[in-house]
Image (cartoon, rainbow, N blue to C red; front, side):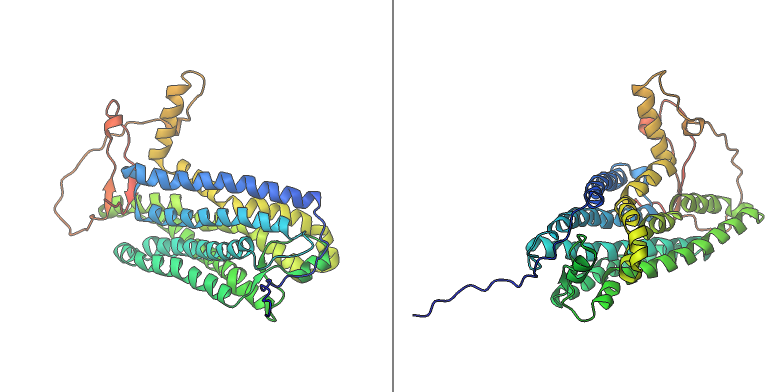
Length: 374
């Protein structure tokens, strides 16, 4: 009788990587900042669905970006565990932890890049080209491309069996590394760019170009004489600009540290790695995982309705102890209405927010929104 022995997944020999204090700080910062960003993403999603007066098409895209960032923070927590596991003498590249962390990381990073570009392109259509109706009609394409394409990339990489540890890096630098692309594949660098870094670099370029074009459009509109017939539309567009056009720039400023670390350890000299790798690793831990927190602060502080709710909350609980900024307080605006004949201007996509029931005790100024959804 022949005894059948179970097959053991292939493992890599021990790289003897050393877990330094910098690596420990990387894991701690990654976990802490990721948890805070998860809370920030939940705040954005919760406020959007809780308060109907802040619902707009642009903010709906921001909610989608927050969902993608939520997945990325979960992936960061998993990757922190694989970062620690890479110091073991036997690397389990076929483990559930390694495969899941790599899959979630590729999907989340690609989705974040695509949703960031989607927001920039949406603003370009609305602000620069003034194709407001067209921009709202093509948002379903953003969902199709920004959710399905990352899944195609992530599962294609998994089907090609490229997930694993870079054993060459572990042996060369004697430092731990997360589970991403294994050095078993012959075209390792190609997979690095196909899965994450290529999409990231393309997103940097698209975000900078769109931001420059949109900013120039905003400045030109500010110095140009405003047509009285379109004053409401112009005010609505300017409101949307101030709230959303900085999201791609936030993405670049925070995400670029991870890209610099990747380029440093993959293409840099030994001296460059010794000088900059540790600092870039810490900056990567903060930047990659704080995008959700930064978007949450922008969401809460740029929307007048949210600022008033925050000011009211502090006023009720800290009476006389905390001074609320003047521009956060409700103000009174008196408008003189002048009747004029219909010029055919379509204002169906633009609405004015009026005081809610909870604000009935005082008159507050309108927060002019952009393409409000019912």
